[in-house]
Image 1 (tube, rainbow over the protein chains, first blue to last red):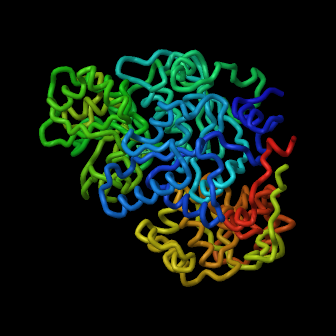
Image 2: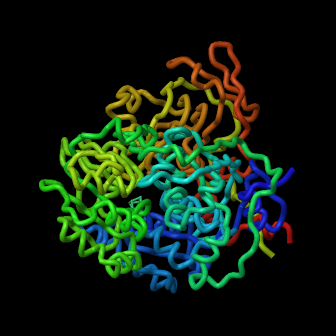
Length: 416
Length: 187
Ligand code: SF4
């Protein structure tokens, strides 16, 4: 029986054959903490009598959730973490570069075949660069900081095959929303999702990141796209590593195989308050919104902003609407700036903010008040996620967000 | 040469994975999220006993005052879904719960429960067990008996039992200076 890509990654890490279902204490190649989960992880590390982190070169500390600090406790957390970084000699530290997951990818800190953990559920995004990456709790992270290893149950894999060419104004976010609607919010619990097929092979890194990012919304432990030419091209200059083969064997044992056709997909919208409650945009078109948020680790990249700029054209955003646009990182911001998109967005009436999580998790600015409705390109629409528990959040693609921001009501991007 | 992980017994050990427990069943059904287990407004608390006073507040108000040491939480699918807050298993632990039996668990909750020294057990038909009954749980045999019916539980991997027996991952890790990884175990 052949091995899945996940089994191969764990076998590589363990230097012996490892199969689905086995519990292994696997060494990790990198561990990421951010300004919300970091302080508790450090506290757990200390409770475990941790003195020195396992390898300061493999610990990554990124500030993004409350940047710049929006409260005194947030500022104290930042100080606490910076002191820890200094004490431990951690140099993979950045205070203002952007959303943690985007920055990890940009810096080539998660590469094919590596096992990467992060104290954040959307760590699964690094599957886009062929890593096995998963989110963990603070106690687990304390353990990782001390030992550089963690116990894992090697998950079985659901193979998701996508074929066909996206219709105009339909893209990776619509695809992953429709898959989430199909698999369900707990349909992939304990499992890994392997994304394959011609659509995935033709998809750029930005789209692959969007898809892997949302694997956790189906309960998955990881999402992964087998590394190929596109992956290695992205990593060139970011990571010194010779390309190598990493793919599932043809006779690998999958838990399940599902196939999707991208060519007949309509723009998708997840309606409040479940990520897996997904409908075609037509079913909710006309819903008035108070805020449109374009950004986050799911959809804050240059490609997303380009899509927004294209839908927008020379028009203005609707009056009486807050349009908040936040590039996911400094690098993405600069690319959009140089392409002229940022100027266009500001002219059209948007608030363009510096790279950070922004309103995504309802912890910083851009909170929703009771009764308000938001359409967001992020990944979660749980009750209270972006502010008041009496607010409503719809999730959609950058194209749908742009169309909605132009009209002030949920709008099919193919119709503006 | 790395040392094999060893757990010092005797300290903070409650032998959570052996013996027989008898307690009341608290049936919760499907999709219990961590917001229901411990609402967000109590996340500034860290003491399990303090957290326990607010467990299921607003969704099942008889639990906080009624649960006793040894009682068993029983649930359907996807227990512990939602946020990764570690306050959730701690609140249940503070209420005297050592064991949760469910058809399935959300992944991060499952790990957080083990790490907090609790035992999450998977049972395909846990959803059928009725609320308020007295259950007898044979931890070694992996059998839950309620109203004369025997329910089989999926075995918990030995390594996870070690963590639970130590009292949780912090206690497990405290005495160790290093762990043997799957890589070193072969060398
Ligand atoms: S952008 Fe949103 S989902 Fe991504 S790391 Fe920040 S808060 Fe989490």
